[in-house]
Image 1: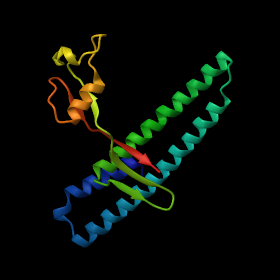
Image 2: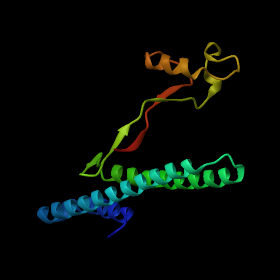
Image 3: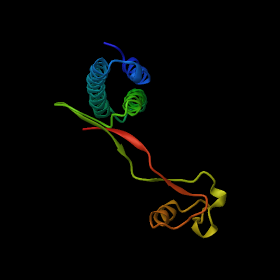
Image 4: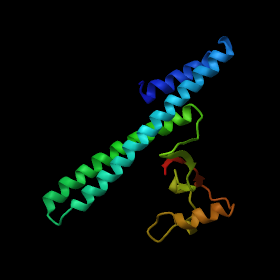
Length: 166
């Protein structure tokens, strides 16, 4: 079976030739690629869930012995990094083909909007009365003010998306 990257590329390439292709053949091919992507997405979800289990097992092994703890924490970090990469690849492919949700007997995989998070690209523009005594912006207050619709120079609410597997 082709990789997720190849399937997504084929899907996007077929979109380019939509007008020059027989409609029946076009739709059948698009459905076939979409089905393959859903199978691949399910396999990704299985691997990600397996990694969750492995992380839990390793965390359960962590003892107060410093050297062993460092080694096990490094393993956890490696697995978590691989998991993040898999999720990012899957989310990117789903976004590129315009598929927000994949649901089957094993998983529901969807791209869901996250809560708005505060982004302060230029702290120097934040008014002094919104700074904490440590001379850093009061992000909680700024976020609340922005949620209320008030203007705060130098700050904005940013909504991101992330992949959820249930």
